[in-house]
Image (cartoon, rainbow, N blue to C red; front, side, top):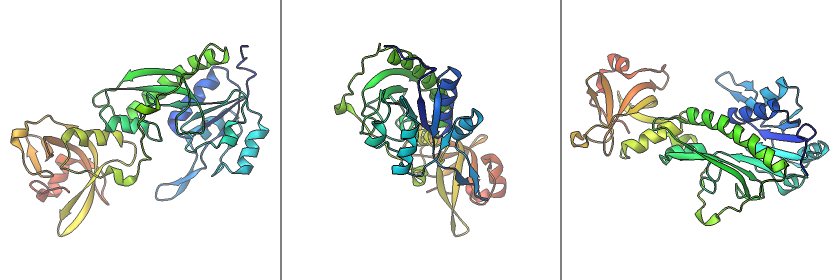
Length: 320
């Protein structure tokens, strides 16, 4: 029997901007979202100002009740039970749903995962697609089970990855792409026209939660890998390196870099900084990276060609 989306009691679970785009889309298409679960407000910046999640902002603007439990403890699960959901839609919520939650909605729980499952199961699929230099990625809509992104697939769609696309750009594009696929999938799922497909666990790969230390650059790595790390961590944590000057080691955040395609026959020592016409470059294991904009710790971000006016010893030194 086909379900009426206007009468369907949907609970949405999500946190970042990616999730907020999808929440706005399903609301604009007439779905009855009767509650939203998202991460608690967090303190940001030097002044530690409390900031709402993007999903909470969208929900409050639309008058949807918002729940922000720090954990899905029994009290939070009871709040969810009282909502009597027919369907849970989860997008980058940031918490694993226990079986007690998965058992609540009569139609189950649907997860939107921005990778071509079973590839890149886990919390950072977009970053890992970029880290790996993937030229194709996509979105999977699946029914949730107790495993980590192991549920049966409802729909899946591919899209290309552009050579210089960063996390921010790809995530923004995938959010709209995923919202469209979700709406198509829900139409078929609620009409009983989709047969869920089992995943091939043998070909599964996993990705970890990104840590701040993941942004550290090893100049003995290839130029392409370093550039991919920059693309993957453009939003957070960024990429950084160390520079020794006046007997002190200081951190430099690499705010904007470019892959140059230099001839490896012009090789210097990995990490060595040199000037090439109007650009500042660093040698890697097999080529060079252009440093377009950098930020020395405690200082504002500047164009590197301007940075060397105040730090002439930068040219010829080594990053580590």
